[in-house]
Image: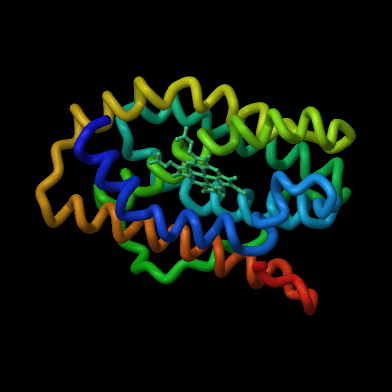
Length: 199
Ligand code: HEM
């Protein structure tokens, strides 16, 4: 793996673990505890994340942008949520992020990393959903399984085409960690019911 992606993985390991331990993500893969409402919350958080960062990704070279399948991912999310909640797509939840709203290469690469990297766990989750919860709509995770096939090519292309200074490398990792924190904060706000806490 390239220096950039090894660094991002190491720098965001704790943030990823914290997200996995946080409601509603901590209900995933636990067949006996997993309920439809948990799934709705997960997809709402992910819809907020994807729609927030999608505009940041448009500054990638078209060949790299295409690998993220942004339109297909978004429409899969809307389709699953429409089936589960009957809510129109425009009722998307806000993404809560503590970051200045300034475009930069580190911000774009951090968003691309979290977007694309999430497809790795997504591939595993798709397998679990199809065997343990076959009645739930799974267009989003099916789409992420396809996205995950681009991971090896993606990390190679990004590492080659966007040389970063040490400062930019640190900024990219900080931004990726902030995105994980934003996912946790968005999850906390979406699932306000008492008792729904990480365990
Ligand atoms: C319960 C939910 C989740 C589980 C069980 C999970 C699981 C995993 C697993 C097993 C990997 C490593 C796959 C591999 O190395 O082949 C991974 C990687 C990753 N996941 Fe998750 N994940 C979850 C949620 C998320 C979410 C919601 C995001 C962000 C939207 C995310 C972002 C990432 C990223 C960026 C990586 C790449 C790490 C790296 O190799 O650099 N994950 N996840």
